[in-house]
Length: 214
Image 1 (cartoon, rainbow, N blue to C red):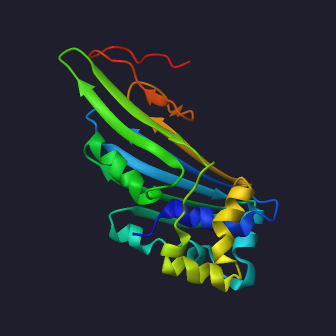
Image 2: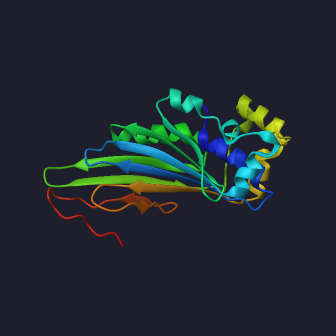
């Protein structure tokens, strides 16, 4: 399967020379019963769109997603914002929290920036605890670009030095590209997952009020 985060990071290699901004936010949304969905919202600013489409290409060509659809993902295609940017959303449902790690792996690959993402639901007679763990680390990336023939061809068409793509990304500290991880759990508002920490909701008794998150 084509790894979405790898392709976004490789797209970032085309953007590092300009004042461009690209953001990918991964959200794990869990319901009371432990089901939910993993979604990714990608936002490019106008400069990033222009850079990505240089030479007459399109965003759909640069980040191809047909295999995600075949694997059960819902893809909302790129749409332009009023200021010339673009937004893309993909999502995949899960029925059990244990499926989250595998779904994130479909996006991230074995060595992408999302580290240790997992979810759980622990229920007892009087309380339920929902938890999402994980972190984002852009410091040490192994994108495996050379192992993706279509990606290699796309970068070659844009006259990008394939052998140096990963070095360019590392050297530029992924300038202008941000990857975020969020957890949206029952009994409270969405909470950002800080790097190296976990997001969780305290146990809630049936009928109890939602706890405050500070």
